[in-house]
Image (cartoon, rainbow, N blue to C red; front, side, top):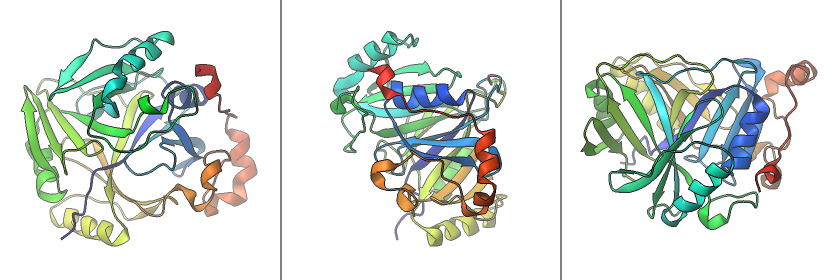
Length: 316
């Protein structure tokens, strides 16, 4: 039987200034802006999707930029660090690049045998770059980052929790994850244990709750193949007492949502249909794309959105 969950689909964060958000993730990190749309639940706010060339599942970091939002704070019950996968020989390149643009980075850290660096974006979003030779995915570049050094997609994510038992049970008994290893109070899980499916649970019984606002993660989405496997997951979760939403159509995938026991908002998102359903692959992210129900209000919606431009050449 094929697994219902195959790794991370996307991670969605709250941001502040929309232009600064686009500049950081496309210009500095070199991700492709694959879709520029709206928050379907708050149509006066953008929803940006940053990923590889086609926005394949497992590569897409998305943001809701609320203009003027105050900075949030990391705490237990949250996904605190999003880890991106980079080629093993690229760590020195990224250290120099980040320092060049004034980003404060950690010393080189080693975790489960892999070297990484940690830093924050302009809103305080926690980011890690994990150097490894286990990732065969192609990168993306606007030209200023050599392709051989470019980000491949997600490596994994850290859930910062007061306790791990119930969350670990959810992952291993219902979401096709398995325990991989432990380092101190960090516990690692994966579907196959490869870049793009890694979930770390960092346990801190005395940790303080964070404040969700700009610079914090709103939710993490896990991959499922299609609407049939999503329905299976929905029924499985409900059977085991989880309060799961109805299926929500996000145009580029379908979604269900629920809270895991530690408080993090989980989503199960379909791999289908993808981001090329309303734009040519060569022109992804160039226009503001709206769901059909919002098209009659396009003029009003666009008037309320602060214009943004794509300027990757500013980070040559």
